[in-house]
Length: 196
Image (cartoon, rainbow, N blue to C red; front, side):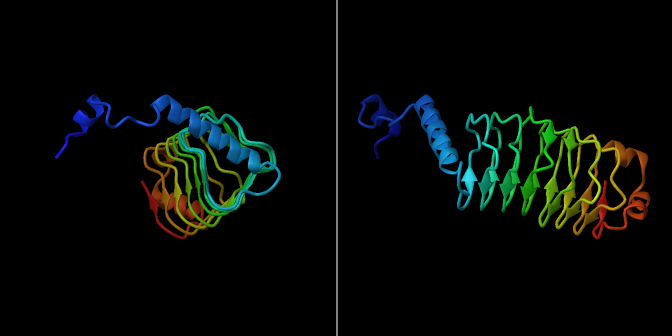
């Protein structure tokens, strides 16, 4: 069996693109995808994860999932609509979730710099905001799945919060201040368990 190193050393197998070329190609491809969706909805999923995309146009619509994990996005566009799930994981410079955003299924904003959600959120899936600077949730928020706020700065949750699944609050200021029973009593719209 011929060893791969031998093949590379003898220049029998030559990598097609360097890592820098692959990165540049992926960025160009992402920009083309964004441009194609500027005036009409993107059909299916749009994966822009780990690409140095900095912004999306206003009124951007994705008919599937939108993955912006570890991009350079610092602000979400006005009237962003994602019919599936929105993944914002790792966007440390993102501070605000605008009130004009619409997400159909789940929202993952773990490890982001988000401090404020401007308007209530209605999700059929999960809201995951682990390790964020978020201190409260807006009134009239409804989560069809689980609410995960582990290691966040959450201090209060609104009394009218509705969560069909469980609420995870380990290592939060709220979990240090109130008991599970107090939170359940204060927020009767939580159908599942409250977990510290």
